[in-house]
Image (cartoon, rainbow, N blue to C red; front, side, top):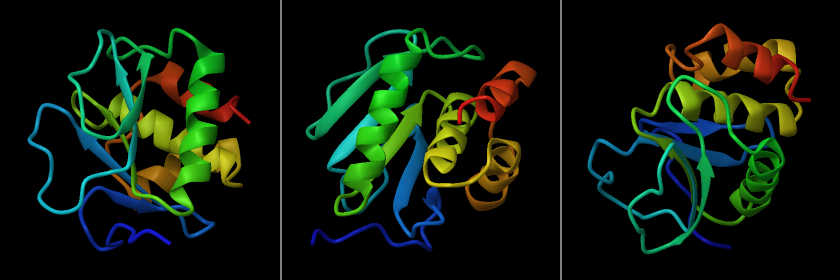
Length: 142
C-alpha cells in the first residue's frame, strides 16, 4: 500500500470511509511533502502540466462542471484511487469548485446530499461551496 497523506495536514479531508483527499488552490505553490499520484483539476482552461496522473474537468469559476458525466467519472476514479494512493482535487482558489467537488465526493462515499456541504465545511474549509447553485448541485448529486 502506498503511503497516504497525513490527515492532520491542512487541506486534507478524511471521508467517512477513511480515505484521504487533498484539496488545494492552484494559485499557491504545490505544498511541501509528498506529491499526489492522481489529481482532478477543475478549471475553465487546461491546467498546467503535472508529473502525476491527472484529469481535467472544464469548470468556469463560480459555475458548475461543463460535462457532468465526465465529472462523476473523475470523482469515481479519484475515490477508488484514494483507497491506496495520494489524490487531490484542485481549482484556482481551492474553495468553490474544489469544495463543491469534495462535497460530491462525500456523497459518493455515503454522506447524504443534504449533509455533504456541512460535512465539507467542517472537515475541509468553512468557505467551501460558494454559490446557491453549487449547493443545489451537491444536494442533487446523489
